[in-house]
Length: 295
Image (cartoon, rainbow, N blue to C red; front, side, top):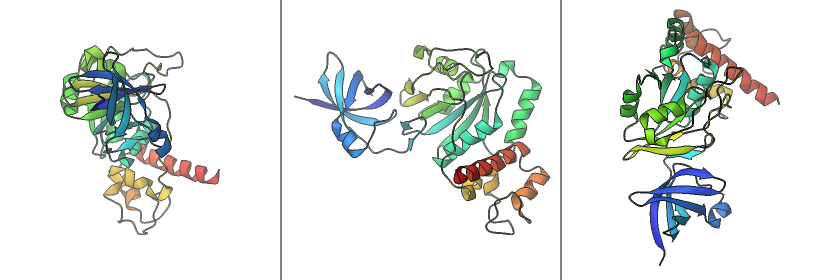
């Protein structure tokens, strides 16, 4: 008699999916052919229904995926409650453009986002002032942490409690070290800096770790660049929270907030109610969208 259970996919490697079933353990599974036929690919974070093939060997087949709350293309995952974008407060140097692009990404998917600056123990006052200046007026919560000293780790645990959260950001910022601080049994491989000042990639696949009952963290491979979602130049402003309150207040309904007269966003920029760095990122994203259209 085939036994059927529902569990969470915590890892997927080379066509195998590892499904954690509460109080039973971890099962190595393959997806049934019907998924390929229907164009559905199981994702890390999915709640999967599996038929157990061999209880002793802990193997099974995924026969169904329950309805998803949401799904993200990169990193490929599902049912995410919140995102923690991890950057370094010191080295590798904080890249505002990359951070703003990641923020748009999660705004697009409607996922609550926390900005986390790790390595605060190595940061100078100048580093911290630049961070605070860039994110002033955005409304985003910022948490400063140090995986080395433990600063902010307990607070991060409280924020993540009861949620499935994704930790993402560039390589070398200490994501794996933070996860080891929150969940020591994860024993994630950690790496230092490459010779050119970029982080070494140590996480090679997306994987979920259970921190506490019903509290999961999804660690993802680090990256140094990413593409914007295909949202259209005219819609980019809607993904900048500090711009949103000003939309509809410009002289022209079709205002792109770059060269038009009577622009409420440009007026807020001049008053210091929008940071210059954030506005520069917005202009760059509009230019990039125009370039994509041409090619």
